[in-house]
Length: 347
Image 1: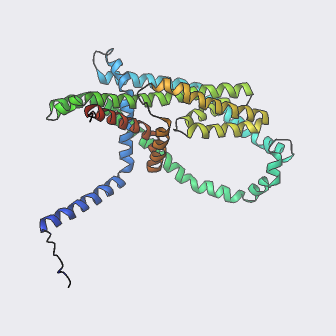
Image 2 (image 1 turned 120 degrees about the horizontal axis):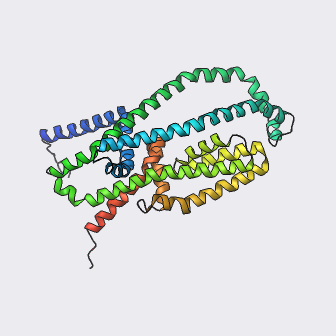
Image 3 (image 1 turned 180 degrees about the horizontal axis):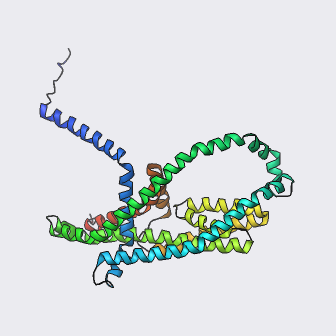
């Protein structure tokens, strides 16, 4: 005999709440998707503001407590250094880039005549003939891509200056916002977790400053090796390698592949020496430079750094990979703080 089916009564108010929750979730996801770019700029500005905050704090003591003046001095010093570097770097970059462009026809003829280490490979697969036959298609492709490149460059500069503007607001107004938070109804909770918040800020600051310093070390080391090997245009090549080094995990490897490829055009022995340098420098940077530059603020195992960079890159590209590591360090600080507040009781 079949049992009668149970009828579950759902109140109208409950159904309305469920529909509203689903609708609010959908609207939130839609808004975040639409505003992903400006939200990314704001997030980067926040990380940079936390990163340079300790420097501004020290300068503030020299500017009679004027935080805006301290940020202005730091910005002015940065612009002066940037102008000095550009004044020294730009002429060399232009000159050496012209040397690369002017050497291409000679390199092509050398390869075509079989006088270059890569000649056998290139001639075997008729790469020059393939490029010559598709010259018009290649020119058309780059011509069509000019508009996209110009739009992307304009968007980059817009995002760059917007990020700097938000960063300035965060740096100048941050301490005042914190004081207002302390005086609010949640002030007691903030003071309870203030130590944890400061540790998270120290982790982010260590990562921002440390990443820039390690890139400078990579640039200097690669420049010395390029000069010793006699490879032309060492300045732009070392600069590009330093920029690659900013990218977590794979940046130094990608830059190293570029250096090895350039060295191979010079000679096979130079390429071998460059491979040894890239592998050795990565080990030195990982084992000796990074622990001393980053300090103990991050304190993350290498496998956690790798997982964080991969997941961050999959979620938000290069920006996600850059921000995922300090985010993982903040999670570690939160976990440690939670365990300290809730110690395990013995049986």
